[in-house]
Every structure is written in structure tokens, then in C-alpha cells.
Length: 128
Image (cartoon, rainbow, N blue to C red):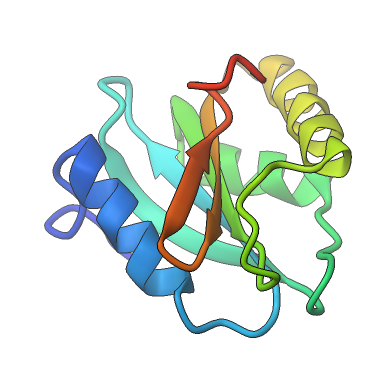
């Protein structure tokens, strides 16, 4: 999905993520592709899971970032349980993705966890 006109500020991004994830009954892992000025130019729901988990493959995320010539990425996924707290598995996945993407000079700027109208930024929590 092209995001040029949809996501024009950090608050618009947060609102868009809340709306996108609001009624999902299964986990979805989104990758937001950013240019060198950290403007979102595309959003892709890359992985779909069950009510409690999603399998995410770092190799596929790296391929997607390189094919779009992204300078940076952000991630977002939902918790259908209604609790937006990042799990240990979320933290481990984020670090794994960050390490894989660092090898090809793509920065990870944030990972958002969305549950209902709640949204947690892992960057703001110091978890990046």
C-alpha cells in the first residue's frame, strides 16, 4: 500500500495503525518502509498469524526492504488480546530484525504494538 498521502506525521501514523488494527481477530505484522528522511512511502502487511502469534521471517523482511530501496523501516503488529505490552518474544524478534537489517545498512526506527486503541512504541520504551 502506498502511504505517501495517508501518513504525513507521527500522530497520523499512530492513528492509522490504530484504525488498521482495531478489529483484527488475528495477529498481523506490518513493515513500514521509509526514505532517508524517515518519511513512510509504503506499508506492507507481510505476515499473518493466529490469535496469539505470527511467524516472521527476517530474510523476507530484508528482501522487501532492499527491493524497495528503503533507508529505514518501522514495524507494527497487533495483539488481539487487547494488551499492547510488548512480550519478550516481541523484543527478541525486534533485535533479530534489527541485526539482520543492519548488515545491509537499513535502520530500524521503531516497532509499534497495537491493541484496540492502545499503542506502545518500543523505541519510546528504550527497547531498541
